[in-house]
Structures are given as C-alpha cells and as structure tokens.
Length: 491
Image (cartoon, rainbow, N blue to C red):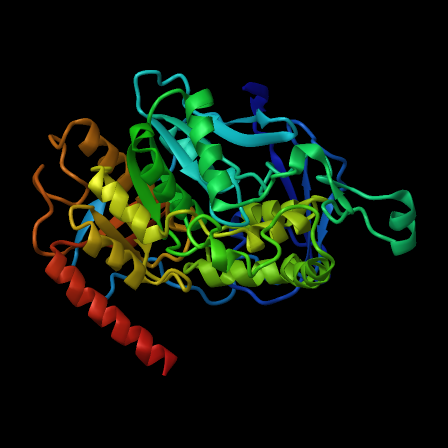
C-alpha cells in the first residue's frame, strides 16, 4: 500500500457566459437549477496532481442555471400538510462570518499497480473521534461530499473515496493496446479501452460491485486502519450495505442515503453459472466490437452537458440548490479518455454475490446498526423502497426529508449532517444520548414524529419537514399509501 500524494483541494474557477448579459455582473451565489434559458459554461480546474493530459472543459448550451433566482422552484419550507414542531439546527460553517470549516485534503492511494484510488479526507487531527467513510453514487465522486467533509470534519475523522472507474479513480493508462496498423486504418480517437488486446495489469479488471466492495475493504484496512461508520448515497448505499454484510467486523454502523436496491443487469457467474454463460461479455477489457458501437452511441448522448443538466434537474427537488460545482465535476469526468469504456464495463458487469435484500438480512443477523435517511421527492428511489428497508429492519431509525430528492446530503446537508451526528452520538454512548427527534434516550416509539428543522443558509432561514417513522405497523400503512400514490401517478 502506498499513498502517492496528498494535498489540500484546489479552488474551482467557474466562468458563466451569456450572449445577452453584456455589462451585467454575474454572481455565482445566485446560480440555481430552475431556469431554462441557454448559456455557455466554461469550467476550468487546476488539480493537485494531473494524472493525464486534459484540456479545459467547455460545456456549451447548458440551460440548467438561472441568474438572480429567476424561474420557478420547489419551496424548501413545505411541511407536507401536517402540523410539526419546529427545531432549530446548526447551518453549515459560514466562513464569511469567521466560522472555520475543516480543511479538505485530496490524496491518491495506490491499491494495485496502475489502479490508484482518489480520496479526500478531513479532520484527521480528531484522533479520539470515530472515523466516517462516505461512498458516492454512480457518476459522481468524493467531491459530492464536500459539505460533509467541511462540516463533519470538525468533529470526526472523515474520508470520501472515488470508486475505481469513476471520478478521479479512472485508470492512468489505457487498459488495452492497439496495433499501429489497426489504429491508423480505423481512424480511432484517443479514447482508452477500445484497443485489440488487454494490458496484463487489466486482464481481470471489471468495474463491478464486487471490485468496489474489495476496494472499500482494503482502503479501510490499509488507509484508515480501524472499523468505520460507513455512509453511502444511491449506488454508494448499495456498496455500503454489501460491504457491511461481507465485513461486519470493519463496520460500526451503516447509513443509507436513498440507496438503490438494485445494481447490475447481468447474472453473477457464481450464483447463476449456467445463466451467466448466455452472456458472452461481462465487462472485461477490451470491449467487443458490438459493445463498442453501442457504447459510443450511448456515451455521446449521456455525456452531453445538456443531458447531465437534465439529470440534475430530475434528482434535485429544490431547484434553487447551487450545483455548479457538481455539474462541472461530472462534465470534467466525462472528458477522461477512459470514461466511455469504463462506463461500458460498469453497465455490463455482473451483479454482486449478494442482492441488496440478502445483504440487508445479513447485516440484521450480524447486528450491524443501520440508519435510513431518504429524500421524499426522489424520482428514482421512491419512498416505498426506504419503507421496505425499515419494515425489514424495524429498529433502524428512518428519517424522511421533504422537500429533498435523490441526493439529500448535497441538497439539505444541514439536515443530513445533523441527523448523522445525532445517530453516531447515540451509538457511541450506547443509547445514553437520544436519537435525533426522539424525546427520550430509548427505543423508537410506535407513533411517527414529524418536525420542521430550521437552519440558516446564506443569510436567510430555511426549513424542511423531517418524519421519523415509528413502529412497523405505521410503516406498513405508509407503504400501502405510497404504493397507491405511485399507481395513481402512473395511471
């Protein structure tokens, strides 16, 4: 194991250009997702350590931002039509008012030859505090947890990693090689992974759920060095639960943030060897000819900045959320020469050895603490999925935030950080400190608790409604209601 480099995270320079804004000052603090007008966005970045040569990124015609708050948006003060007690919670550290946030360091860890893992860390000076590890969703990276690193890093030792094949953990060399004759005759571009033969170091490389589970295990053992609280959003939630099921001795607790309950389209060769033989390719390099054509076609569509903007508009319920950095970081990743082939490997990789529900059952059997924090307005992982997890693990606290979408940690980080702090304190004190929104330090009661959490953000007061689900019976009732609502929407 070797930590290749480690430095503070560089600043991000974002320049917004509009054809009709001559002479007008643009303030990035007013940029949000609610507008539909077109503009060009120039995203330039200087990285702590360049792993490959890459030009600046020009994202053209992205209409996902408006200036000065114009356009419609979801109110962040809705409480779902129920009376709720208002609770004041801390906001994020406001550096403009002299509040200090934790410093973030950007590092690379060489796990295997040619496979370097990028990660960010904060709060490592808090030697007597428990470690917390964040796992990102599909298509993003450690940058998606900047608000957790800066805030929670003041109290805990915090890490966030990029999965191999994503973010800044994409390979530093082409995993395939091409003959000069073939390369010239086919007129291939500079994309990696489309060669004729696999390089020896990539002979078994598949960006699968099992690879990421191994990556997390070795990272905890070799970099962190002790059991952790592990937190995952979307795909990261699946990996977090899967990892905890396979390595309970390395986990102090698991928090799922709108965790996807499914991953992988193709059968696992160990679980279903006969069925797996039907599919000739399982994500290894090089890509077959038929897959190359499909990959280039699909990648051209989904890597377009306009498509990325559309996705962000879907998954964020509050369209006033500033996502300029998230947008530029995603676009930047798509410019990596290995991005398209890595995407293909991920999509064609086999399913894990355990399903989501099998992993959850194993965690329950091994008494791994689980906490559920879900955005109610998620268009992908709808509330019914979180409620199903709660029904199977009734002792797990389940917090439903509204309005919030698929990425509550980035949309309402104040609330997620508050809930995480409280849950960790409850476990660290063996229950002597009550769970967030629970009046007494005991088990969760039968009734649901609904409270409005109010916090300061950018000089104004914001609030969201948070529901803590009680007994299993109330969860079942809510599941039935949620299913009927989904059915009516589809009808």
